[in-house]
Length: 231
Image (cartoon, rainbow, N blue to C red; front, side, top):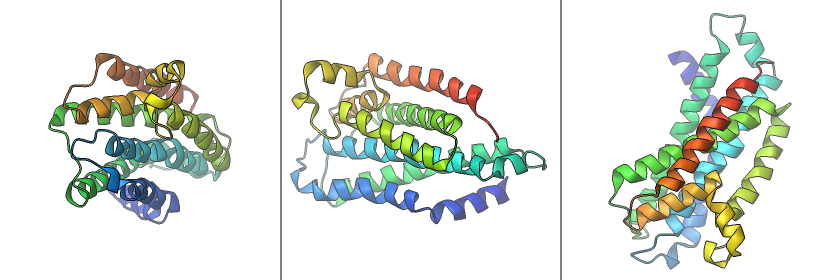
């Protein structure tokens, strides 16, 4: 398992998508960082959600679907190294990438940009875990259904941009039509952003947003498990 993790780590570090997942949210944060005020509760949560969304909806499904397309999972199924171990390693590595990207964002925002960091650590961790889990569940379902890596990439992009719009990542929520903003709150990315903003504002995330993320994680995660194919 350790050797497999080391090999997959080397492959992930060579993946351009991994670098983009780190740099794109950081670029957005730095470019708009001059507008950050001490009590800002919008920009940093937005950058964190972008980082999680890129990994969960783009990098994860593309990687898993490509492995199946190339027959890697099928070949592993006839060796002592069950392909399920590869999936577990990949999920853990993608999670490490998300944590690294978000940690970098918070470090730069807190030290260089002087951004406000939340005091409700446990609430923030809970929101982060559920938001990441819901994005990973969707990405896993895309990987399960997509015929190849290119299709997974395209589906992930097609899902990401509408969800990002509904979540207020492209246009502030208060500038969206009321019905659109309401629908956005019940999307996994929208619930994630809202819960992060609550934490940054000094209040615990609402049970509704936490429930939305948990429901997506459970239902879509089970669907991904059911439909996933080794070949």
